[in-house]
Length: 180
Length: 247
Ligand code: SF4
Ligand code: SF4
Picture: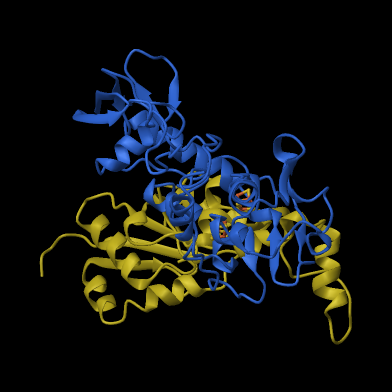
């Protein structure tokens, strides 16, 4: 093994379904190869509680829909040198943004009252405040690379990561697209 | 007196001009468009509202090209070739403009491909990919448009409409029904059936489905299709027009 320091990688999911992370895990045995070059310092799939400053690559899944998402997006931008929007929700708002044409009150009523089977009522605590609209990550903070797909196929994620590790800037539109 | 029906009356002589497209020397009939001349020579210019077999419209601006000596960009679909013309179809500037056009189209109405019946079979979606439009910089408008499901067989979802008017033109020029037209201005423009009546109540619609087949997006679709299931068969058009003697 070479003594070269490993690249540090952080991931998080905001308003998404976790499908992009599942697609990441679909790298299967390639994860072992990846682990030789990369240390995952913060992610739903590891146990660290704090995103270290100066992380090399940050990957965000999901759109920015709540105050908490906004906070996380800003934190990733601040602490990661290179930020990737992974998947259509992060890149375009996608399914979470389908609520954007409705009034926020109506959205709450629909979710917690009209469709509730027991105790219809609006939650008053423990939920982060919803923003008026769900927006793509890059409408909140600057993003360096956009990987479309719902979810992006594992092969597309592999292509993007290996190109980055090789010091090149990949063009993800060659391997994925909106809705892929 | 016997006439010779097979001989067309004094066919006008069409001159051939020479021009350069992307540095290639090309010969074309003088009544041809830049787009046709490019296509004939294997040079692909992206198009969206253009459809072979229908009249030229020049609305979407995807096919803009640079012509040496002109400060204006020209639409390749509606500009005739000329002797000595020098055309550039794919400069950095043109690529940037095309991406911007696509961004504006995606931001104007709702294009959430993952849940769209046309996902994977959509000309707008594949153009975005081909042109490297990988994110939309402008704010999304988040405006809701109507969906009309009143027709027995088809549905129009205005949220996916890019106002290319292919439906209007095919219905008027090929089917001869002129059920479709455009109403309103700017972002409020929308295609309508008859005098803005529900499609299902249209007395002029023949139910031929030509509009559905030529619509480039998931705006005009067959009912009963789920996400990704709407595949269109637009290939009939050039054949139809040719068989009718290009009338
Ligand atoms: S019409 Fe095309 S671009 Fe729009 S959502 Fe559907 S597949 Fe995507
Ligand atoms: S409905 Fe389809 S064919 Fe008609 S204008 Fe809209 S996008 Fe074009």
